[in-house]
Image 1 (cartoon, helix red, strand yellow):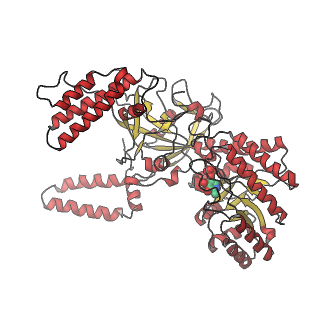
Image 2 (tube, helix red, strand yellow):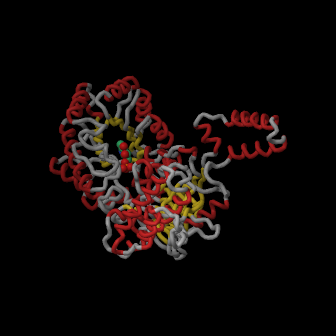
Image 3 (cartoon, protein in one colour):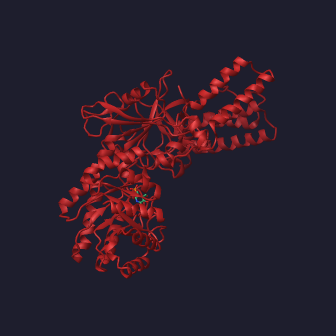
Amino acid sequence: EELYGIKNWGAGYFSISDKGEVVVNPYKDQSSGVSIMDIISGVRERGMDMPVLLRFENLLDAQISFLNNSFREAMGKLGYKGQYKGVYPIKVNQQQQVVEEVTRFGERYHHGLEVGSKAELIAALSLMKDREACLICNGYKDEEFVDLGLYAVKMGFKCIFVIEIPNEVDIVLERSRALGVKPIIGLRIKLSSKAGGHWTESGGDRSLFGLNMSQLIEVVDKLKEEKMLDCLKLLHYHLGSQIPNIRDIRAAVLEATRVYAELVKEGAPMGYLDLGGGLAVDYDGSNTNFTHSRNYTVEEYCTDIVEAVMTVLDAEKIPHPIIVTESGRAVVAYYSVLLFNVLDVERFETYDVPEQPDENASEQIRNLYDVYRNISVKNIQECYNDALYYRDEIRDMFKHGRISLRERALAEKLFWNTMYQIAREKEELKHFPPELEDIEHALADIYYGNFSVFQSIPDSWAIDQLFPIMPVHRLLELPRRNAVIADITCDCDGKIDRFIDLHDVRKSIPLHELKNGDDYYLGVFLVGAYQETLGDLHNLFGDTNVVSVRINPDGTFDLTKELHGDSVSDVLSYVEYDPKIMCANFRETCEEAIRSGYISASERREIMRAYENGLRGYTYYER
Ligand code: PLP
């Protein structure tokens, strides 16, 4: 458990069973967990290939409840007089099934939705049933967007337009007059508070979105002039996603609540304070203010927010508003797990080399032999320097035609054997030269996984995000290999070579040796937020198969939904190929091959069948 840190990042939902398999347990007790290997068997029996994205319905349900109950408890404890009403930002995972489940599980808490575009509003309107929940409209709004929102208001929904730029208020007022529907207006502000972390560019004075304080006053004055100030009900800010430090969160809430109080004093009815997203996920399990973690719990997050709002408003005798947050990442990250099988391994091995250089060997080869034979704890840095120097010299000599390919091959074997030996000697040392830190990385095996980084965990490639990764079985055996993971896109960026660690980032991960043809399955965890729709079709690897799992309290499970991943013809049609025309063209090529005597007519039939099967097949490696 310690090797992969599952206790730290698993939040009680993921653990390891007595059989050495990863189990998922939404109820956070030992008795009713379900082994991921049992789910894989079920998926395989139904004829679905890896990679598969599992969505655990109960984990979504549990996270929504956890967030809402934590706010309720904090409010109860502190005597807060308002309520909490969360909204789920659709952008975090827009898949129909995900949003549909959020609205279903969220209904008992009146947990609503946040949209940032017209398409998202249209999606939300197809799923919103709860008139008590908020429907927050961020993003730039054209006439069509505003009209749809106003119709929602007319039908009794709490659809709130958040004004992002000053001119937007004109279109809202104009359409509201045209349709005869009074809008509910919110204002998004730029705070001077700024948070640290990877994803937090939305905060701060110079942030792209929201009104600065003078624009805010302009909009308030315009609403007064138009006698529409009574429509101003909400204040919103978004500091950024994945805010690791609770102090930044607190500072922002205090600042925004001050603005809220001033708007009340200006005569706006207000009633809602929307603090945006930012509640972080502890991806590395370190519980620190590292980028991939957070130095607070969800309970602390809620308590600090409620307390900060009360501190400001009680001093001004202003009633407590409904607190809204737009948590996305924290609600859906745990929900999905990507599973893939390992197709092959390129092992790092030491090479057999002759004991002695042969008599005609060049001086550089002899020098490399000397380095290799004389490594000891005392001189590893010197040996490292020398080995690199001679290897580079030999490469140069090869380029100039002064040594043969065979000699160069021998030099590379000697070089890697030397590196291997240095790595072993290094283990004896407590402190070693910083240059040697990465040596294990260079010596790691390459495990080829049946998945695409670009399609399934794009943030790992794009912004170096770390996700917990580990084998989902064989966890009673000690993993004896050190590995990096390559995907099957053949792109040099299609790899995972940074892994979570409590104190730093690991450059390789311990994995098990492949056993006589048995499948070896790895899981990438906490991938429910942002990964699915940011994924792209690099090398034409499409959407993976998706299976929804419901875990029952008695420890059984149901596979409730399955979505087949893209076929080859699906992904080709996304890039404007027409599979029918492709078949016709290829058929012509085959005919031409018959005429030119390459193939017979009956071979053509076989070849066409293979082509058509290929078009229908999964884009990933099939068994
Ligand atoms: N609200 C807005 C306006 C956002 O832009 C985002 C995403 O960054 C979110 C909410 C969701 O944030 P998080 O996933 O950190 O909860």
